[in-house]
Amino acid sequence: MKINNSTISLNGLEFKSKIGLFDFEKESGNTFIVNVSIDVDKIIYDDTIEGTVDYSNLFSIIESEMSKEYNLIETVAHKISSSIHSRIKNIKLCRLEIIKKNPPIDGNVDNSSFILETTS
Image (cartoon, helix red, strand yellow):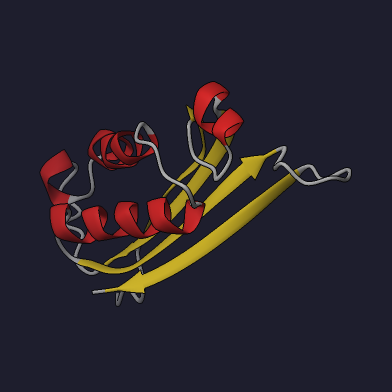
């Protein structure tokens, strides 16, 4: 059997973060949803965590950056992706989506989002 691709995802990670251009966004924060999928080059199917990607490690990388203050979700997405590539082995592709609930737009908008795909 030949395995063509292996993808590990965490979806719907919710954070209250102080990311935004405006002072009120820095003070009160906003709700963000993060979805991440990583294509892994080599998974060892031996039923041990050492043979795959530890979800808690992936979550910690995202949580660490989402706890910091940034102006743009584009910037935090790049920081998260860079950390994932440097701290997790065997990643071919990282697809990261950051969704900002209730962006400060004069209109009825549920969310805005940014998607970043990076390769090693």
